Length: 126
Image (cartoon, rainbow, N blue to C red; front, side):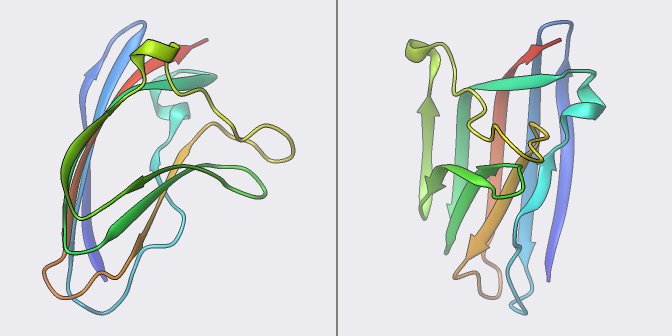
């Protein structure tokens, strides 16, 4: 099991910042778990401006929610930042059936004390 927290650091009229954390007890991984639920932000969609991350001993995959989730980022062990501002933000690639605009998280290779901290800087669409 992975003990998780989600915190809204900022929720303005146009922008939002969400931070998610997780620490593994070694008993399994997360599989397509909603980490950013856009309905709680009062938005019809979001684009990702930046993702800052610190992954300890494992791999994290981020996907747009849809009937068939659409992967958009792989976060390796270590820390870093993905900056999509030059392209106007990472827009939802989960079009088609069942697309919600939510961001899903999947972990792999997580063992005892593996962890993640991920901060999403988002632009809301209404």
